[in-house]
Image 1 (cartoon, rainbow, N blue to C red):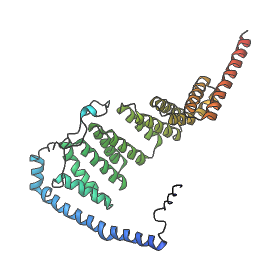
Image 2 (cartoon, rainbow, N blue to C red; image 1 turned 60 degrees about the vertical axis):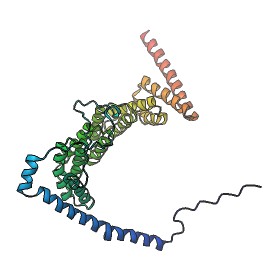
Image 3 (cartoon, rainbow, N blue to C red; image 1 turned 180 degrees about the horizontal axis):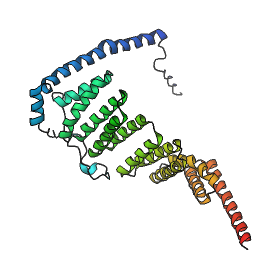
Length: 328
């Protein structure tokens, strides 16, 4: 006989009433307000007490400044070896030394206290912790920890309304030290944060192009950077520069085999060049887009681009004939 039909999958939570949802929301709120937040506040107080015993007072300050030695690598770092790391164009790149900071170290306690204060939205306190610990990380040549502290320090200053030059310097330092640690993914994250903080399209696009020059890998990240920079230039009113970068993004996507993304990039700029009557450029666009659409199975769209290309050839022949008649 026929196999029994599979039971319909019920939507999770479909049988919960409004009262049930309200009760769950109240439980979650109680956990946060009565358990999580008080625990975090207590942890910050305990950490502050432990840090004060090690760093506060004239004796501890002199001991720290005169006899603190750089912390050595623990050998348990998860950083990739230098041969597996991406190449960068900066000359001062050096891999992170893999130093770890357990909770019993003062540096680990200061970083944790800063993070907890940040989550509690006490940004002034968090900023002071990050500012104090960043010099220790730099002395230990632990570049990734240094970059992370600079990044959080910059965010705290931005939120608290500190002068633009100060938090911009912190974000620049975070980016540079992420490059020193050969951590391209984190460097891109700091740049994305910096873009959101700056809110200036042209400046953000120029910063992205700097990143694209610093990171010499020509993979998908480069194509995405070019695409984003092109869109930002267009939003800033620099349509010609934006179109140029979108064309470069489409070319890079096409080389990497991402034909749908390349097609989207070309479609975003083809109408920018049409009114200028730059026939060689628009013909190249339509020919490339026709091939890409055909490869993706978009036959009507591919046919449309080929017809536009054929019509362009006809117009070009007419122009050549009119020019020849005039010269004769």
